[in-house]
Amino acid sequence: MTTVCHEESGSMSAKQDYDCVVIGAGVQGSFTAYQLAKHNKKTLLLEQFVLPHTRGSSHGQTRIIRRAYEQDIYTQMMGEGYQLWAQLEKEAGVTLYRQTGLLVMGPETSGDYPLVKNTLLKNKVPTVILSRDNFHQHIPNVVLSEGHGALLDVTGGVLFADRALKAVQDQFQKLGGVIQDNEKVTEIKPGPVVKVTTSGGVYQARNVVITAGPWTNKLLAHTGFQLPLETVKINVCYWKEKTPGTYGVKQRFPCFVVTGSLESKEHIYGLPSNEYPDLVKICYHIGSKTDPDYRDLQTDTSDIDILKRYVSRCIPGLVPEPAVVESCMYTLTPDRHFVLDYHPNYSNIVIGAGFSGHGFKFGPVIGKLLCELSLGEVPSFDFSSFKIRRFQSHMKSAL
Ligand SMILES: Cc1cc2nc3c(=O)[nH]c(=O)nc-3n(C[C@H](O)[C@H](O)[C@H](O)COP(=O)(O)OP(=O)(O)OC[C@H]3O[C@@H](n4cnc5c(N)ncnc54)[C@H](O)[C@@H]3O)c2cc1C
Image 1 (cartoon, helix red, strand yellow):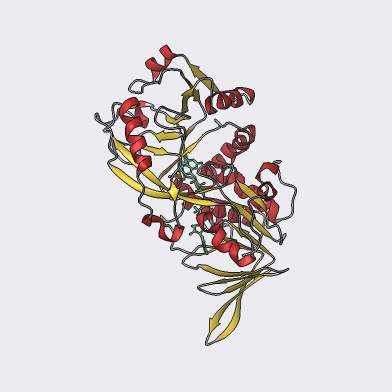
Image 2 (spheres, rainbow, N blue to C red):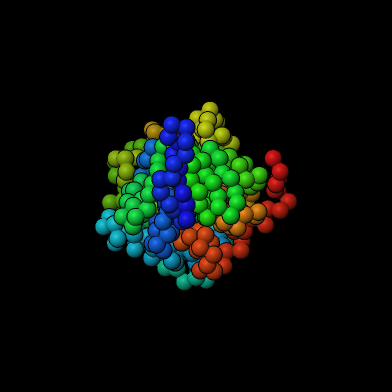
């Protein structure tokens, strides 16, 4: 059990007991807390900012959901992911997913496109392979580059991110979970009972889960450990349709990923116009290094220049200059795969981090897996590729 103390006239008084403290109320921490509450664990979810906020990685109205991946594990995890999203929709009575399909385009015989195609077919995901003729018939107003293949992951679509975050936090609270926002964790003292100090009080818990997104290493520093994580700022660009509605959800325009292009080797992805009238969200899948506490000091816009060239060449129905640019952050691991594991020195501290710009869709599955780890249960997926030991050569254990 956890004890929370608040300083009153200089003395610490016990306020409430919890089984587990989850640090960070982004998508991963919120789903973890929800799962723990479902398992009847008295759970406290701590968040440094007033909720909802736009300073981490989980804000914004939309995210892509898809089964199209280069590796089987993600495609397979999303099999359960869709079921868990549907379950939350049902419990909360809200729509969180809109099926649009996900168009994947890229060099047909090299890079990620053939890997994605293989994974989809191997895992029997409903997929339509588009010939060049079919492409022009079904996807007008997009140029398919010479030598590129195109396919549609039929399961792909849009997740309503802000709405989803609110829904899972509301469900967590309905299950008896406690959210303390505007409480920054300033110290973690590991031990059989972990002491967590915040700007608002002191908590003690047998189990702690750290899901702090870009701030993960700042928190792990209190435990004498660092992961090889890099935080980058993403310029979230919205592009105006020359003719309103050309690339809209109502026109059944799909989400899309370009696995490589003349302009760049990194992925470019987009979502149909929906959340802002006549604006299509198209982003570059990498950004420049930043400190999460000083995100906007990073002013590099070379990614936007790449996007401008791509949009101008391949999506001619858009004005090739972003009309709106918002900000978000990725927390990258060296191999772009997640970290889901116990702290190497403390088995009662679980870490969920490094979602590398593709973690939102997995929120319900990640929450389930981190909950299982925290409860000491055998995880329902073999996710050995997400273990910390793979970073042995990168890690610094002393500060
Ligand atoms: C532009 C953009 C587009 C994306 N598109 C997609 C997509 O299409 N599909 C997809 O699946 N994924 C996508 N992602 C990735 C996905 O959004 C992230 O992987 C996911 O949101 C990460 O969630 P998180 O909970 O790990 O981190 P965060 O959302 O950052 O949550 C961490 C939380 O911890 C809190 N915290 C940190 N330190 C402390 C402290 N000391 N005390 C208390 N609280 C603390 C933070 O304030 C924050 O709220 C995208 C990300 C971005 C930025």
